[in-house]
Length: 228
Image (cartoon, rainbow, N blue to C red; front, top):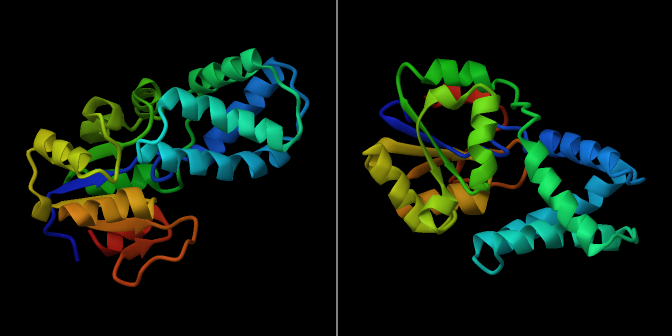
């Protein structure tokens, strides 16, 4: 269906790089370093929806990066009724960013699908993640060499789904909307953001969310072979 495309733009976190698994391992490490006695599974159950809510505010330019990093941890500890100091939360926030890219689990099929696509398409990354860790993730997970360009929201000054980030990414890639395809997991940021800019999009729906019928979706990365 999309074999005529020339440029494929991938999201990174939650699409190629297994953010949830790597994040859990990072929390396990920094809790151990700081001797924080908390059940990891219980913490993550509370933290993950809080984190998603703050990322939505961040995408919408309603909070800045530092507020996101601090508030998501404070709210999670408060919800669990765990007493922490402001200093400790800032320390954990910094250590989380420091250690996050030391864990680099990829989704199943990532290397295989990139090997499959690379000979026939030019591959790119568009990410909302923090610039200080995104390139580390790409390099340390061994997939940086697959991508010709990497567009980060911090270099553009806006985040997906803002059309400016898609315009910038296509400009850097020297690609037109009609020859491009966006592949990502987030319906609002990746899929609708691309579609509203005139780029076809395909949703990696590993989280099994409800997806509008007019949006093409896959449950596993290797399912891209059905479309490309």
